[in-house]
Amino acid sequence: MTCRSTFVLAALIAALLVAPSQTQAQKHELVYAQDGSGVFGYKDTPVQPWSGFHVHDPDRPAPPIVTPGPLTPADQPSAPSDALVLFDGRGLDQWQENKWQVEDGCLIATVGPMRTKEQFGDCQLHVEWMVPEEPAESIWDRGNNGVFLLGVIEVQIFDSSSVKLYPDGQAASIYAQTPPLVNASRKPGEWQTYDIAFTAPRFDDAGKVCAPARLTMFHNGVLVHLNQEIFGHTPHLRLASYDGVPAQGPLALGAHGCPVRFRNIWVRRL
Image (cartoon, rainbow, N blue to C red; front, side, top):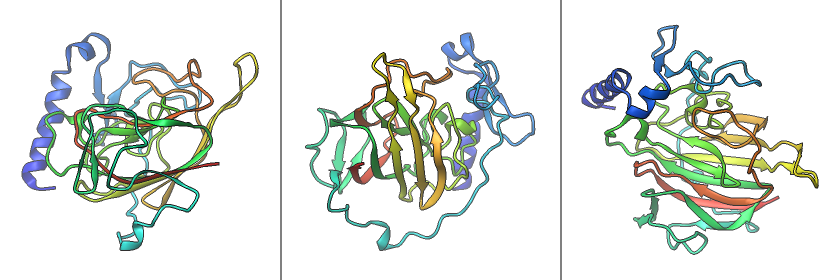
């Protein structure tokens, strides 16, 4: 990131902290972590029973930063023979009607979410994505996107190489629930990979959860979740629950006004 980009980013953060939106000003106060690290988030949100921290708590320990291995041509393997290819640089036949763009073999986020036609439960999912190099007008749009399992459980996409967002909202977090074990983010303009093994929740005949959803995940080849329990859907500023969470649902990609690029998306039913 250039000095000018760093200055712009700092200015955006400062402006946001001083003058949050009307909705935020009425409901929640954006604050910095007490340790002076520069991480920002909220302290007036509900406390997560499973962690003891507030939702989007800036004082939650930030995952340590690790440097993933270098990109090579081998990082773009063909999908396995039993996989359903969701995007290979061409058409969008596997997706519901949407306004996303295909350009130079890449899928570009516009208005979302974008959902698959088919529904999935247990699955293995591979997604490659890139944060734009250009500075965003809002800090919330800095590579902001997400991979949604069952259509309602978000694995966050974000520029966590430079933005010190609350740990349960940074890249590779199970949004509003669990930070990744480490921060393996690459810089904007570099391709990144998510490889997810997802176990869908099980429900009894009355709709009660028998077994919660779980997730194992690699970010840029680095393990960031290992059989991690998922506590329900992933709402902003609120606690998770299994109300309305299905046993099967579409895969989806979000959109928050940021033209995040995607390529090589495939899924295997398990």
